[in-house]
Image (cartoon, rainbow, N blue to C red; front, side, top):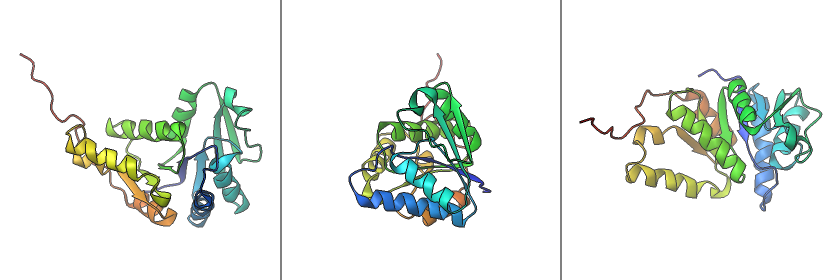
Length: 196
């Protein structure tokens, strides 16, 4: 799969483990080494700021998308290649999805999880065929991956759809997975009730 821009979902804080900041720097450097542009939430704080600063310091392209009401709270990054200011969170996610060729969620909170799960759902419904993965630093996403496995076991999710979630603790390996991803045409519904 040909990739030019990767959307990174990640925390607007640093988290409690220094490994997360190191991973954000490593992801930024991995994007630079492959000539990939960054699409992200447009903030200048937390892990999102670290990824953007690393990409920019390496001469890469960083595109931010931030809603007006968050521009002050998250301190919009003013040194980006391009910064799009949009009206709402919905507009933010739609534009990031449009600009990116693939998606990676790094450690983060509710916003990161929501962004990743929404883009994953869009893929499940066939609204896009772009790869999506988790940068699973220090097992951060182990519980979420276990939940996805549980959804398969309980027949709320097909096994082939579970394979849409790529995961690695290493940025380079995860980008390899995204590059070699082959989307499958899988019907979302486990069982469709018969009309009587």
